[in-house]
Length: 321
Image (cartoon, rainbow, N blue to C red; front, side):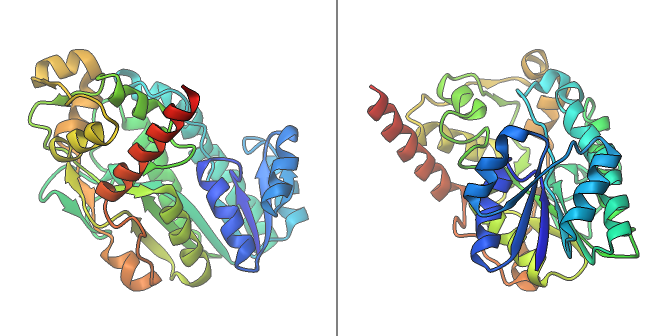
């Protein structure tokens, strides 16, 4: 198939593009940076330069690529600031609203038959059990400080699933870890845990779902090639409470056990948004993706992935010493 990947040089694109090329697809990688064209060619893709926030550039990129499938992986995630979450995610929120609209409009004009878009598991409503399926309420009661971010995610989902002229698929990824993510070697979250700056807030009862970036890319290929329209949770097999996974991550990185702070102190350190994520977040089940896509994560649990991360971090630290 002829596939256009928007956001082809991000953490997901770096994994996804080579997989699609190896699978025999003709891949066009969209980037806004002229300087990244050589990098995309090295991955095996044909580079297409366009600013996702410019509708004319997007229309031209899609028209020239003539894709059968468009894959929307546009993000612009900078340093994490849980106290001002929506402000930190403002550039990505624009890509998830305006950028999505531009891609869909151009795709409709070009007759794109399948549109696959990135979403995120953390939008599940914080009621009921700790692990959610795709049928559970999503995005109707965002945590304080995440209203704009969750609203932008809902915009992606509603727009893609509501596009009757194409086959729309939405992938609710778990928290990424691995190369070029904030929870990779040298990543922002990794560094915070190693420095003891990532505490367990309150009872640490928030349930998180993770997925290794390489496993997420393999699931995306499966969705592109054989997924029926709809929503899929792309997460590993073990949703876990913060109080469970954070100490394991710290130990894997050779760091001291994370501090435990009361919820009130957590609000001062991480704001209300961070406190809610630590104490109330709901995880996600991957049962539908495994059955419908024939996919299973190679890193079945974050426990294996975090040990691998720790080993690589130690090796790189030793090499740099």
